[in-house]
Length: 493
Image (tube, one colour):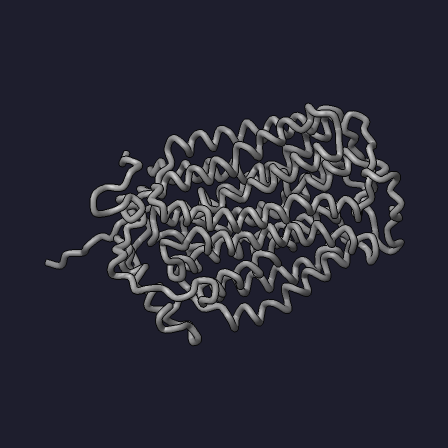
């Protein structure tokens, strides 16, 4: 392993990034540049997609007849500070409710993950061939139509709702997996952490927004309108996506010439990266231990994220006696903190790189901070007396620190194999998304089996899975371009 201090004549940062900085032209203003505009457009796309994906997590409180299926945390019915909750707890009369057990709810939550797992890798590969603009744009429009159809699917029956969510998962997997190909052509190595975190943090803002306003919409208009509104927003946004997004700087009609030369030169000087299409080295990928470490650690982190996103409203409902409006307000707080920390984490990662901290060290620090503290806080929560301040503090810190992984494992594939990054980032996210499939199902089973100690079992299992993946990554993770990802010269006789 290389030393932490810079070597003579060339820093470790430059060695890891593998760019000859002398040949890269001076860049313009970053925040006013086209590449940051692209990141912002993807940010909004992820905002809409995440809101559509998680809308059912908050509306489930209103969709289910809670008088029949309600957990209590050690018998607690503590109310919010300031006295009784005077807000009306009734829902609009026209909003239907269903008799779904916690186990059935877990299956509904997980159903979208079935489809999402199948398409993330495929969409990453497809976007690398035909372009992100088409793959993500068509998928976002299809997802918006399906989310509008979801209330009708629920009325038609449980099987219809699950099938609709599975198809929605297929197209949403294409949104999250297909966007990775853009950073092969738009992301200078020195700025990838911040560009990727700006784009990915849209998911956190979308989760925050739907959690915040979803309860209010459900209580005032009825829970079906939460689906109609965010489905409509997606349909309206799609034309802007097709107009504003371009797959590379060369084809962009409004980009500044200086910025175009800076991006192209930065990527052209990255060793072993070329535009020549070559077959995927599948066998070498399967034997790559650093790549497997990303998959395993991402699986553990996605298990954490799935529990936070899916069960935060349910957990708060079990601890406090609150209506759906106040539940939404409390559940949204951790995600706005996570949104801010996620963006700042990307800038911090790039700052550390400019200080000659090795790239693999930055990736592992970000991954550790996004995993261990978050899971440790959750596993300690059930052992503490139920308290408004304690519960919200632990949930906020746990959720707030978790997006630091965006500057770690989630863009690490771009370091290992730049030429195959769209496929690998989609594949690793797809394999990790199996956790989003299993976590709600298993957690629903645990909660259904033991109403008193169910949450403790859920968080203990989360901690064990998360810690195992983290240890594997810290031991086997790397950030150097792998031999199988380097350019191969063809010799003609």
